[in-house]
Image 1: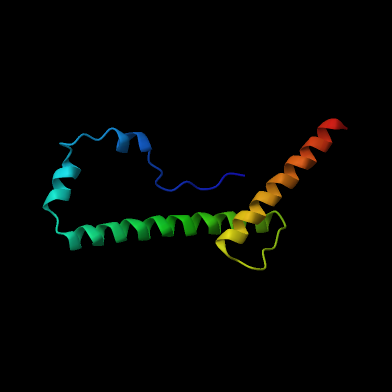
Image 2 (image 1 turned 180 degrees about the horizontal axis):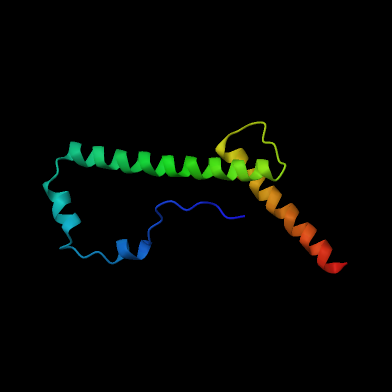
Length: 97
């Protein structure tokens, strides 16, 4: 089972940015209010990506026959972990037989 990937970027590019990069200059010209709005927008986008990925995971679990009564992010992640553990246990039993 493969989850859809959305806009994943490498952290190495962020680690290699130089002090003279365009983003640095852009950051210096923005007011604190504009920087706050940009941070808020990035956080909102990050939160939406996470919610979308958790929804995709919930759908995969339901297709696997697992109903999640309390549909919270933490519950979906917990049930996914339990489901993966169960599949691993089944695989181990099958390989022994």
